[in-house]
Image (cartoon, rainbow, N blue to C red; front, side, top):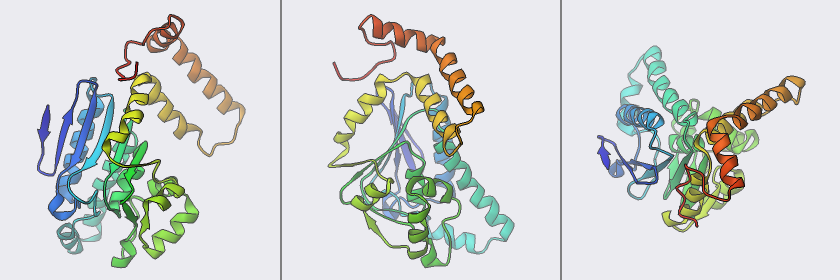
Length: 265
């Protein structure tokens, strides 16, 4: 089943893998206000869809995303500061939605990801890229800054690397992106994502959602009594949940859990 928007396509399979395809190859999948709005709508729909287990973000054509569309930037150049603020907040809302999605997210980067394209993949849980992919945070070349994407990019590559690439706007290759932590896996093609997908399909959906929230809640926090109690309460609550009980029983009975749609035997 595939749904067509003006700027993207959304499809799914029987295992619950929803593919969200950026579909403006003629402009290297650069995004404008329409694509931002449609991506937001699609992500919110998938987040609320109980059949969706994993969201796979892909792109049509040679580029993953060239960042902001030039015509969109031309329009924004004539905006007032307040209008620019509201425009930027729409992108901020999209990135927040993607970052906080309750389902596991995978980005497959088949070509260049520039500016806001790096922001999109920085919000995904897992990033796999083809060896030919290149990356850049090129905003300063236009006298601009990667402000809205900065929380996610800095988290992904670290402050030290961000200080370099935010200012130099240098392009860096897939190997460098892997060393920096922006890319988890370098792959030959999309078929190489199957082991990652299978691994995700084995996990309990609720446990995965809580695990994602857990990372955000404990990151960069001191190990205090309060944090110890928070983590202990979390596992106690999960153990007695319906999903936790099913997972433990499946393990003890040496069978697949009810949610397991992995192709692995």
